[in-house]
Length: 329
Image 1 (tube, one colour):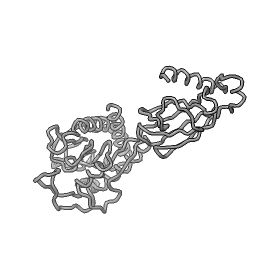
Image 2: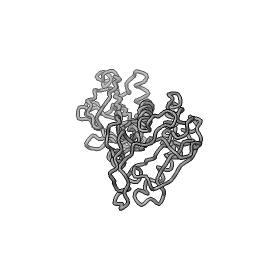
Image 3: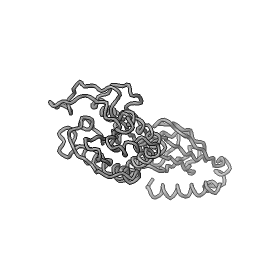
Image 4: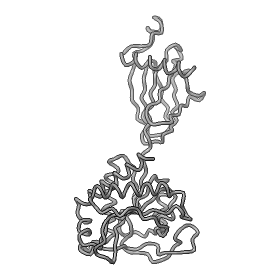
């Protein structure tokens, strides 16, 4: 069957179904065709078998699955238009994929079946930087590197609040998780406790193993100069010898996040720092950035970073930056 005929027939069927009528297949057929039935199935698996009755319109929603899903249709040994001999139809884009199923008893009558495909949620890994007890053992700065750095430190602390950075980072990561989940993202945390022992390379491995769409290492800054303030993001350089392939996406992610964060929080925008000195980024195989939310060495900024209202503005900005990054892909 030619595609134009399929689409034309489908539109007719949909219009007739919407009006509560059956396709005009002759008086004899009309007497034996059951009324149109509307049914919606929610499917957890990427493959689903559905038995279709005559005149039935089935809407099948594959939740949280990739853009390409395979659905097998069974309907009394039907002849299926625009579907291969196995009865498999593949939808390549988000939205609705229309297929036609012919009833075995009445091949002149074609049922319209609607397959609705939802995109797989974006996977974001959040790494609350540092931990209660640092690990001074050393690890390579990147895959195969001879240069080594300590595996992980406990971070800085607030000059005014005395709040350890590792605590602040986890506060922000957990708040950010709630916001991202509410926006439809899938979120994985590298830690939910302060009492862990995760090196920077191990933190990067979480995103790599999941094939994450983005990894955000949440940190706060420190400086010998008390007047230093503002937020920044960090990514690898284009010349990075370990993971230069992630530079374009990481750079775009870093720019989007810092711009939206600073706009939402009213923070000074210190831009994007490109460097190949960060182990957690050098070990990454997926887009990854470090988010420096502010300076704990600045008394005023330190106090703001500990306040719930300011944290909420930071979170909104980071989430807005992620949205903007993915919209621009």
